Every structure is written in structure tokens, then in C-alpha cells.
Length: 120
Length: 485
Figure 1 (cartoon, rainbow over the protein chains, first blue to last red):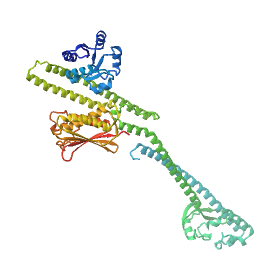
Figure 2 (figure 1 turned 45 degrees about the vertical axis):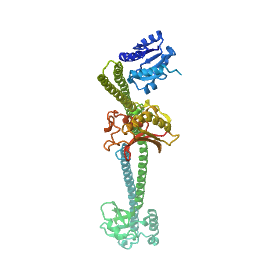
Figure 3 (figure 1 turned 90 degrees about the vertical axis):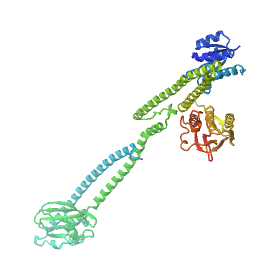
Figure 4 (figure 1 turned 180 degrees about the horizontal axis):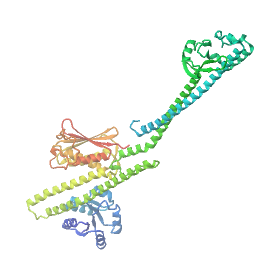
């Protein structure tokens, strides 16, 4: 069973994504902010983080920080309401990008793709 | 140079001032010099008249008064007349005659009652009749005056002598041409100098004013060319005068305020994106979960499905508006890289074939160009082409074909996307790029922003899109992109 961490300040988004992912058999944990996310990542073996970013405040090298501090083998999907093209330009190096307005079904598909792809 | 320009007016002002000063100066010089020359000339005439009178008195004293032969001395002033006269008189007169240059003057000697005692021989330019008509006569006072005879100017002196035994009036006319020649030359030189000086100052002044005003022209150019796309520029204020520097400072401050406003607008857009799309994402999430829960009946499922497609539409509109705002107000987010147009169109073609398959529409690509590159932001250029293709697909009947034709046109690549639908009504052809404009046949598909976005993207690439109805049927959208140098 894969462990997924959802980092998002919107409780309803976390709930909707969590339900669809749990329905598909994943173990899901939720964090509303960076501190909580840090805590969970330190105590639990997480396979994938769904990381909400708020552009344009987010610094472009945030993922280096995240990857540097936490497990090297954790996969990160940047997950926000901005178009995927813009996310990709702003935050480099994530395993994938997701536009939250595509809905939970599309998210489930993306999560499966990312988890079953071997990191090159 | 226009008449209503600071340059012209400044030039006119100091040229005018200079002209007035010159004219006054020239006149003052002219009249002072003239007065002095005439006074000096009159003095010379007086000297001559004195000499003549003294001579006549001397002559008279050598004869008895009764035999004073004035009436026989019409040729008195001719040199040869005196050759046989008494040696003393002769010597006196000859020396006076030579020294005073009397040979060229016209001399009349009268008694106090005006009767002519004797006169000079006539000369070509001073006939007796003309000269004496102008002389006038006064036994009571000395006077001088100017006359003109046969194009020559003469100065006339009328000088009475009251010495006994024979008081006389000596009248003498002498050419004053040389004075007026000199004055003419003086005037001409003054005018010439004035003209040259005026031209010179006008020329220098023009250059000076042009230099002073050059920053104004530069500011005008920059202000004319500033758009929201390049608000980062500032007008340089080096090497300018204090007044101009104030102006530049004010303009730069204004541009800075505009820049801040625009950056607020684009930040605002970003926040709007987040604030609008987050609830839409939540609604969509909840609806998908509800639809997948299996706890709803058929009616609810249908209503849910309708609502979800509307939510999708709202998400699409929000995204499109933000994209438009981004391209129009933050074009710096576009990343331009060189791209082979033929390879790019092949990608567009492959993507279009998949989109067109649903409606059984064929896509044809005609691109014989090789090795031509355009400098583009690929992500957005893709969006441009797919938007135009999607528009063509929307207006094509099932089974029709869409052609993508690429040609070089001057320094641009021209890509025609040709459909065979109903074409665009002439009344609508100007509106197809307007935001939220939807043709009649577009039905529920599309929100009317696709072509606006396409045009904005083309313009951000210094390109353009033109639209025309295809002869026969359908419409042709021509996309122009400047080729990379």
C-alpha cells in the first residue's frame, strides 16, 4: 500500500482528494501547512506528496528544499489551480504537475501514473 | 521647420532683436558720418570762397575802381587767362587755383544786388543755366545746400563778403559725389555685414535651440512608444538642462506609478485565478465524488452531469481570461526560443488529426518549407494554432476537410488554416477576434475567447492573424509569424 500526503490549506480540497484516493486503496495523510507536512514526513514513510503552491509568491527552488530535507525517494506532484504550463515554468523538478480544477478523477489517474513510473 | 514651433519663434525673436539693433546702429553711423563729411566739405567751400574773394580784392586794388573789368572776366577762372597778368596776381591766383582744385568747381561772383559780375566756364555736367537756377541768392547770409545736376550731386555755398570798396557774394558749387559714394559704400558694407551676421546667428541659434530641444523630441518619441508592455523603461536624464530634467523626472515618476498599477493588476489576476478556481475545483471534486458514489438516482445523475459540464465551462472561461490577461499585461512570461516551423506544424497536424477524428474530418498538411525557424514561445504558439484549428473544426460539417498550408511570405511565415464550413457572414468578419464573440453556428461549444487568445498570442510574437472567406465556402485564417534572422 502506497502512502500519499496531501498538503493543501483548503480543507474541502483535501477531503475530496483524500476520499477518491482512499477509495482507490491508498493510505492518505493530510497537512494544512508546511509545519504539519514536515512533521508527517519525518514520522511516516511517504511515497508521494501532493503539494499545493500559491503562485506567484512561491520561490522556484522550493522543491530542492523539500527534496533536500526529506526522503530522496519521495515523489512530488505540484498541485495547484494554475495552468500546468505555468506551474512547470515556475517550479522546476517536480515529478509531475496537476491542475486542481481537473477534478478528483483526473487526479487519481495522475497519481497512479506517477507512482507506477520508475524515476529516471 | 514649422511656424508654430519654439525653434522658429526663438529664432524669430533673437533675429528680430538683432535686426533692430543693426538697423539703428547703421542709421546712427550713416548720419553721423554724413554730417561730419558735409561739415568738413562746407569748410573747404568756405576756404575756396575766401581765396576767391581775397584774390578779387587784390586784383581790384591794382586797378582803378572805375575800370574794374568784371564784365570781361567771364573766363576769369581759366588758368590761361592769368598767364599775361601781373606777376604777383598771377602767382597768387595760380597757387590758389592749384591748391584749391578750383578747376573742377563752378563759381559765380555777384554784386550785392544779385547781378552776375563773372562766372566759370560751363562744364559738361554743370551747365550754367541749370546751375544758376538752383543756386538761389542771398546777400545777407551764408548758406549751403545740395543740388543734383545730370546725375551728379553738388554742394553749393553762398557766401557774402562785405569788405570795401567792393562787397561781393561768392557762390561756389563743388561735386560732392565722393561723399555719397563713400556713404553708399558704408551703407552697403553695413547691410552686408548685417545680413551675414543675421544668417550666422540664425544658423547658430537654430543649432543651439535644436540641441536644447533634442531631449524634448527624445521624450516625445519615448512617450509615444511606451505601452504597458515596456513600463520598465525610464527616460535617461543625463546631459540635460535643469528644466528638462524636471520634466523627465515627472514623466519617469508617472511611468513608475503606471508600472506599479500594472503589476498590481497582474498580481490581482493571479489572486483572482486562485480565488475563483479554488471553489470551482472544490465543487468539481464534490460533484465527481457524488457521481461516483452510486448513491444517486438517474435524474440526479443527469442534473449532476449537466452541472459538471457547466463547471468545466466556467473553469475554461476563467483560464482563458487569465491567459489573455497574462499575454496582454505580462508578456515577459513568454519564453522565446528558435523553432523549426515545419517540425512544429507536423506536431500541430498530429494533434489536430486526433481532435478531428471524432467528427470524421480529414486534416491535410502542406508545408514544403524546410529549415525555416521562428522565434516563439512554443507552449503559447501551440495554443494559438490549436485554438484556430478547434475553431475550424467547430465550423466544419462532418466529413469535410481542413487544410493547413504553410508558405514563406517575405520575412514572415504564413500559415493558412482553411476550413470548408459555412464561412463567416460579412457583417461578422470584423468581430471574430472580439472577446466573447460567438458565431451563430457555434452552438454550446466554445466560450468565444479562443480566437481572441490566438490573436493576442500572435501579436505577442510580433505576428498577426487575418481572416477571409475561402472562395467557394468556408473561412481561411492566416497566421503570420516573423522568421528568425
